[in-house]
Amino acid sequence: MKLGLAGDTMLGRTVAEHLARDGPGSLFADEVVAVAHEADLFVANLECAVSERGERWADPSKPFFFRAPPMAVEVLILLGVDCVTLANNHALDYDVPALLDTIDLVAEAGIAVVGAGRDRATARSPAVLEHDGLHMGVVGVTDHPESFAAGEHHPGVAFADLRTGTPPWLIDTVQALDTEIVLVTPHWGPNMVPAPLPHVRSAAAALRNAGATLVAGHSAHVFHGVGDAVLFDLGDFIDDYIRHPILHNELGLFFLVTFEGSQPVEVEAVPLALDYCHTRLADDDEAAWIADRFTTACAALGTTVETRDDRLVVHFDPPTDDGA
Image 1: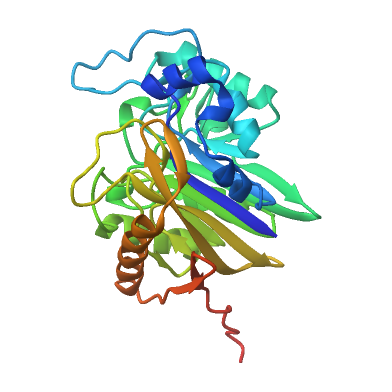
Image 2: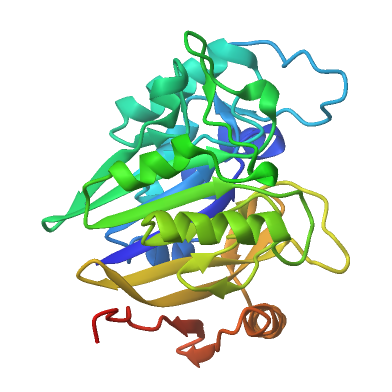
C-alpha cells in the first residue's frame, strides 16, 4: 500500500480567485496530479474553509482569513484525496457556519474528515480508511489556536496544548484504534521554523509510543526532516503566500509512504515548486536546493536520504523484536 501525504492545502484568497476563473484543473500541473494518483490512499491538511457563508472570526489579532468556494471540493476529488484534516488554525476563519459547510461539502464528496466536528467528541474522532483489506485509522489534532477548540456542545477543532505535554485523550484515541495502521497528523508548532521544536519532538515520541504507526505533521509552511516514522512537517502544497528568502516556502515536497503490510518501509519525497496559486514539479535547480535542505534536515534526525529517479528516498528501519 502507498500512502500520499500533502501539507497545507490552502484553496482560499487569491487561490480561490484563480479557481473560480480557470477551474479546478488549473491549480496543479498534470504531473503533480499524476504523482498524487500513485497513492492508494491520500491524506491532506485542508488549510481553509470551504463555504459561501460566514463572517470573519472575531479576533482583532488574527491577520489571515482563508475561505474557498464550494467548487474547491472538485480540486480534492481531482487529486484523489481520501481524507482531510481540519485541525488547524484556519478551519474557523469564517466562524461556525463555514466550518459546518466545509465538513458537509467534503463529506458529501466521499472524502473523510478528521480534526473538526460539531462537538468535541466528533472533532476528536478518527476516520478509518481502507485499501485492499488494510485499514488505516487517521487522527487529526492541532496545538493552536485554543479559541478554535470544539466544546462539549459546540463545533470546533480537536485542540491539544502540546507545549505542556500530550493529553490523555489523544493517547487514548491512538491506543483505542483497532486498525492495522494508525496515522496521526498534527498541526503543531509555529510558522517558518527550519526544524521541529522540542515540544514537537516530545509529542511525536509520545504518539509513537502510544501506537501511532506514522506521524505526519504540518504548520511550519516549510518541510522538515524525517525520523523514526515521523514526518515532522510536510510543508505547503498550494498557496499564495509571500516567499521566505531563506527558508523558501515556495519549494516543497509531496510524500509517498510505502507500507509492507502494516509497516512503513520507505518514504519517497517528490520535489515541488509552488508558483503563485499553482503547484508543479520542481525543475533541476529547484530540486537540487530541495534535496540539499531535506538531506541536511534528515541528517540532523539521524536519517539518511538516497536519490532514486529524481525522488528523495528515506528507508525506515524494520521494527525490532523485543523478545529476540
